[in-house]
Length: 140
Image 1 (tube, rainbow, N blue to C red):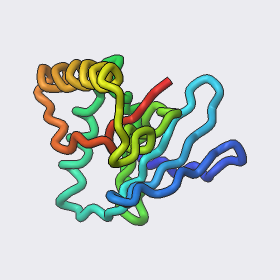
Image 2 (image 1 turned 180 degrees about the vertical axis):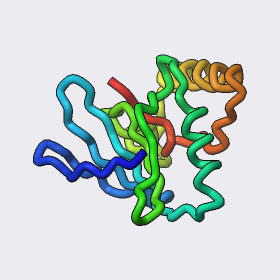
Image 3 (image 1 turned 45 degrees about the horizontal axis):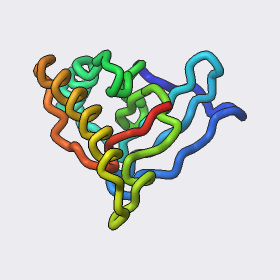
Image 4 (image 1 turned 45 degrees about the vertical axis):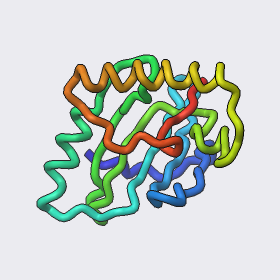
């Protein structure tokens, strides 16, 4: 599965994540806007089956988990990518930079949603392994 469509005039490139180097492009389709997260790595032939298996298993349906719409590996560079629902409000880290004091009721609201999502993932026998503000997206 390769996502080799060229950028369109309506697409919006999102700056690379400074920690992971992942890049994303917002595919602006009125009926289903999405983001393409391109990982800043090249997979070896031995790593490709593991990525594809993990991506297949990440197709969770929960109100507080961003849906994976598609996934694949760009064939010429062996670069993996995920096509996900677009989260228009960025990450928890961009909304609340380090050393920002967040009201308790807001923290409780976030914790309930995150806990619900993690519980669901665990019930599906998946462990996130990298829960941090930079990986928590804020949806509509």
